[in-house]
Each structure stands twice: as C-alpha cells, then as structure tokens.
Image (cartoon, rainbow, N blue to C red; front, side, top):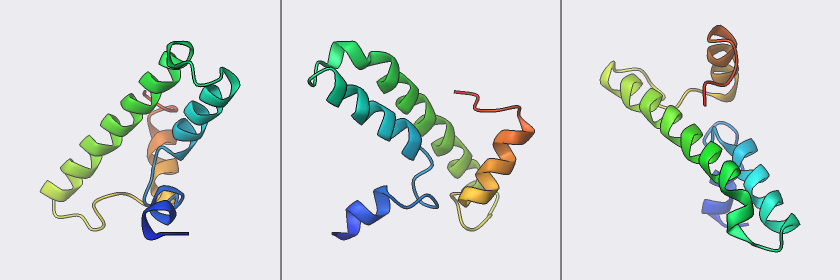
Amino acid sequence: MDKNARKVQNQDINPCMEESSDSQKCLDAYNYDKSMCSAYFQRYKNCRKYWHNIMVQRRRNGVNPAMPTAAERQEMLAAVGGKPY
C-alpha cells in the first residue's frame, strides 16, 4: 500500500473516512451513476469543509497537531450534539 493510500485510511489524518466510504459504496451500488449519489458527495464536501475550518483555526491558535486526533474529534462532535454537517 502506498503512502497516500495509508493517509486516506488513517482515522487520525482523514476525519471524513465514513463519508468517503459511504460515497464509494453508493457509486458501487448504482453502477457509478454519480447523479444517484449527490447527497453522499455533498455530505463528504461538507465534512471536509467543516474539518478544514477547524484545522485552520487550530493552526492560527498555535495548536498542534492542526488536525485533531480521532479521539479529540469524537469529543468535539459529542460537545456539539453530533455531526453538524
């Protein structure tokens, strides 16, 4: 497995693994008809945008690592009452 594939599958690096996986499953189920999976794609985009904004804010505040770990993200999502995207 190459380096980039490991990054995509690492929960500490990729906060949107679930959304990515759901999008891929939808594409598989609908024979890669993208029009049938637009809701999944939008959820993935919203997830990426949300965590990117968190990462930028943490970087501005000098917090390392910029991307929260999987455990930190679970705590953050629980504090806001679930996924806001």
